[in-house]
Amino acid sequence: MLKFTAEHEWLELDGDVATVGITTYAVEQLGDLVFVELPEVGKSFSKNDDAATVESVKAASEVYCPLDGEITAVNDAIVADPSLINSDPQGAGWFFKLKLKNRADADGLLDEAAYKELIA
Image (cartoon, rainbow, N blue to C red; front, side, top):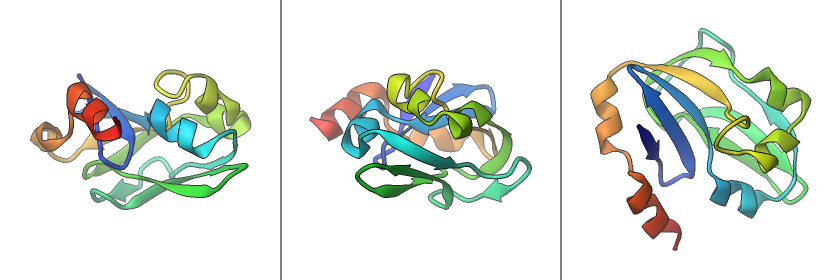
């Protein structure tokens, strides 16, 4: 199940684990990404904590943790090649996997239709 935040993160939910990245809209606003800093595996975050950082030719931006949970994996490929985020933000450009503290919290996030309305 795909969910979105108003801060332009997407989550692909698989049980109590969410794969997290930034949306195509966010990438379009940032421009070409040149640097990514990811969280450490095993680190716990609360909803809306700064979890990662991206820098583009235009600006630097934080990537927020969309829900409470613990980082279980990070995508080292985007650190080595940030352009993967530009070319496939909602696929190969994922940032981290988050084991959710409470899976039901995801119900409060935006679905795709609500997110599209937000950015329209």
